[in-house]
Length: 456
Image 1 (cartoon, rainbow, N blue to C red):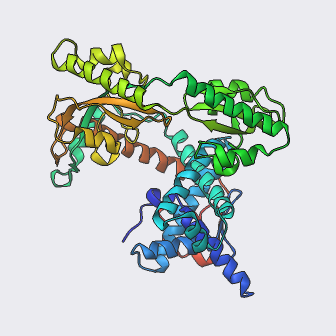
Image 2 (image 1 turned 60 degrees about the vertical axis):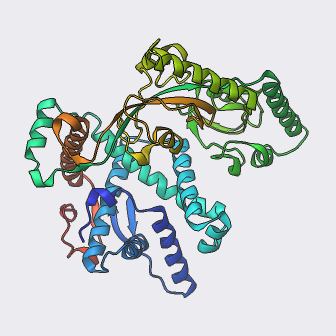
Image 3 (image 1 turned 60 degrees about the horizontal axis):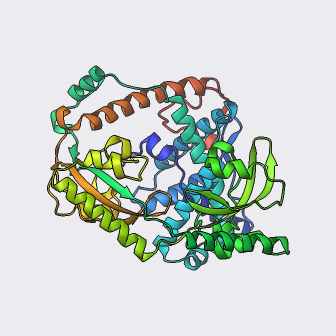
């Protein structure tokens, strides 16, 4: 079983990182030193425990425990370290908010897999804050490596002729099968928030501000009451970030605060906040916040659903088109002006496989024919707000072998990815030649795909 350098190369997984920590800790407990530096790329070191941890993880996935496996793992790590080292030299960075967001996503994934935070702590024999700390650095390194790779390939594009040439180069029996895909248009309404509910939320936040002024901990109040799942358990702390990392309404207030000062109530698309400054460093700052989201009343949801039902009937009666209805009525700024056409965030196209759809949208289009409109339904938007929608099934394909007329976007993406791979191959060869690299004698017999040893 071969391993593609890019596919696992850019990511020593977070669970492997924790296994590495466990290996080192166990060895130290026995008084035996098993960890050492096995490679250096610029100022980046690869540890023996990192290689072993990844080997253990891959073995559980069915890879055979051979010396060649260790060599392949080391090469993927050399690739990542090369990217990270160059990112530091070129001042390519990732925002703390991005790291924290990915950290939250992975922690939530592992909690779902194992059943609860308590079980995760029991499994790793560590409290959650230590597990998060162990994940943090490896996730940040992965994101820095990915960002560096994106920087190198940012100008890569393909012409229509290159797409056609790429398609012709694929053997007919190697053409990929395209699964069923959907194109969907949506019309979204945000149910009105009653003024009494907004006043209740603001009063609650002002109460928190008063409690902090009287000596209570802002962080403790955030843990207890904040409705931001990404920061609540960290006492509302967001980590260091720049103005561009935050929505304008939030950053305009936050960056004007002094250390420990608590803001007035701030409204954003996410809800209502109070903010406490922790520390400023030039154009970056770290703060805490408490987020409260106004609840939508049953009456307002019912009103929004009734309004959608009326709009739907106008479209069915051909009084207006779905596109015109979006322009006139939709509250979704991302799709309103393009006639409601949804864009798949995973591919950047208008095509969705079933697994990429919001489950409530998938359920709404079940049984629809192309051109038909769903009944109104309730879901949440990207900001976690309650929204009511109707959706139109614009197209639905059957599984088939890829072809240019039907699957141009797919083939364009494949051609672009191949061109990016070529650019990265050239970048790696060039950068290896100008970077200090040292590899432990134990690995010098490895048959690497790249000449990592030539620079010694």
